[in-house]
Length: 313
Ligand code: NAP
Ligand code: GLV
Image (tube, rainbow, N blue to C red; front, side, top):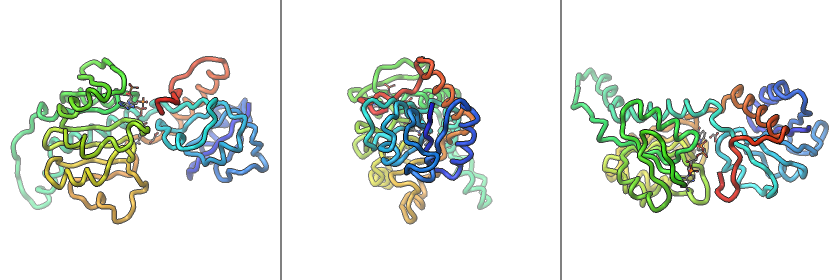
């Protein structure tokens, strides 16, 4: 079995060595630094392990049957011309779900408990308690009840916030008021105050978070976007915050990454920016999962995380 590896990342060599150690029965070819044929790169691999590979990598592998994505989101792959027969398999969880739960709970609690305001007051030596907040006034709506969204919903429930969820198809999740489809989107939004986005970026979800949707959130709404920047119409968010309808946002993902210098998000007092770190891809967990899936597929077994072409995730 030949496996082509393509990961444009400074840690690519370490990944390659650990993948080789995890699946020593395979012949590995590293295309990360140089996506052209050459010594050690035959172009005959049937399996690939890759993250956001260039089109040339796909075109130079006509025998490719399965591509294992080094991440949960497959939107970068979906931009490429891929053979219809290719099986795309994404990471499911692999240590990301608990990180996502940490990130969302951190920004949710920091916002609702007004910890930034307390810190600012403390810096100027002020002892200001204010009124206690009522978590019942902060229903948390989670868009996307998949592998990550469900884990986040469980974590948020632990803090006794009302939790709502929205998915494409009907779902039942314990302790979560579930909504689904376009038909129930407005009801979901108008019952939500803190909106957490964990949807994949697809043609259906691109630009979904804009004036029409965000303005339906309860007054004083707050957005936590940990999915993809392409879901959010950035200027609509700023307008809704500046008009006072939304209280602010915590954003981990952006239409352009890295977020360009001078972008208004950097300096907006109500917007917290992090550099796409809400759930890091963990090398050991990911390699264990990828190696397990390749072995299972070779035995003819089914694996979790197979992307459905028509739905785009
Ligand atoms: P997943 O398991 O595929 O879950 C996706 C969820 O979104 C499902 O509940 C799905 O509904 C729902 N959904 C998809 N399209 C929809 C639509 N048009 N309308 C309503 N609901 C829709 O994905 P995941 O593993 O939880 O990951 C979610 C996303 O998080 C990834 O695609 C990636 O972009 C992002 N992510 C970000 C980071 C980061 O560091 N910032 C890290 C990892 C992942 P159904 O349940 O009905 O299918
Ligand atoms: C990271 O953003 C991922 O999709 O895994």
